[in-house]
Image (tube, rainbow, N blue to C red; front, side):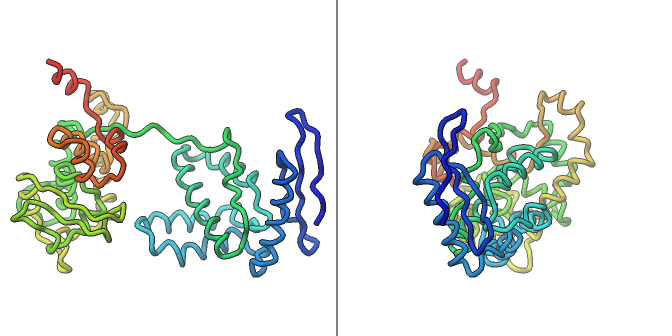
Length: 344
């Protein structure tokens, strides 16, 4: 194993590790201390020796194995699968794991910034980091280069979304989605789902998986089992009179679910309805003093802001399914008028 090279730079002394396995360079890196450089050199060589030929494994191999073995067990299976399939077509997927460096990921970030915003890249980078962590458990590699990405080159997270559903928008969307009794089409069900989300704070993926046996109508709540909640923790969702009315309008699915439409279809049909009714025009946004287009998930912000008037913080956390009370500060978005009226 070659000894790390001591290098003098403008920022001080650095130590360059250049691990080699079977005559192949595994990727050089610079460190602040000799100990870090030696540890990196040892880990890279050990990874190549123990990883079942990891020097020949590529990121493409890692993405595919993760997609087949890990992703099916994830709550966000659909979107994770889509992202991994896209990653496999990226140039970075051809890089061998033994030679993968944080500079490769920094260049990937710079390229992605040409087409998408930092929050999207941050989510993608988090997934790549998860894949590389699994690679360590598979003994395909011994380090995670995501941890070495320079702070100033990392994608920045965006401020929390504070969008509320305005009364004008709710009226237009209710008409566009055709919400009226009886509910017959999937588009109408999407309208009911949106209104029910505002009443209860349930996520779209939770609502569309609710079955008849989860309904406790005589006790005015829905029991969500841990299998369908995002956090993996069961919770009870209180039902208002309006929520009970909305549920009674649904025809129900043959498999026992109260909604026939699934989460993916909700997203598609909601977007289509927005486009058809012209709610996304700049003129309309200006008239209601909003900058961002409404999304289905904004119903959760609206629900939290309404329910906060009814419940104490800890009660609200139970209803919304938050383990950290800080989430109330993200989803509770009172308008300036609401706050002003409280003080009068």
